[in-house]
Length: 106
Image 1 (cartoon, rainbow, N blue to C red):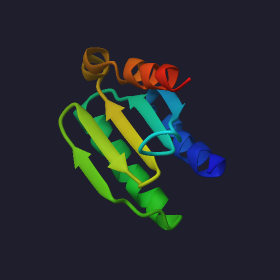
Image 2 (cartoon, rainbow, N blue to C red):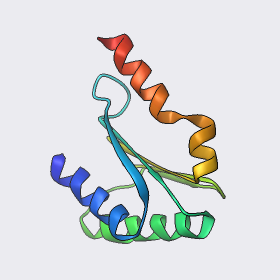
Image 3 (cartoon, one colour):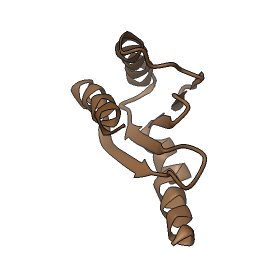
Image 4 (tube, rainbow, N blue to C red):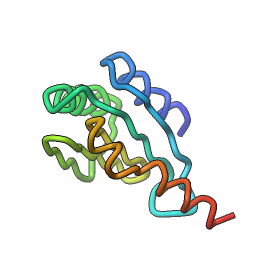
């Protein structure tokens, strides 16, 4: 699993995604959530294309891909990848939600 996470982070980092964070959510609906900030819609769509191409080459299966102007979500079943513009990331504060879930679990 860690190898898969590292590979996804490497792809995002090489394509200039910012503030990449990984959350271990094994007590919940997925094993891991990866969140990264994009530079805008075109950058997000480019990241999605790059992830699809490189992960499919590694036999990853996508259950769903939702792409919007400011937020894209890729569902690999056990890993969720969220790509957000800075405005949406600040607005929705997913990191805070995930951290609060983990604190409640402990």
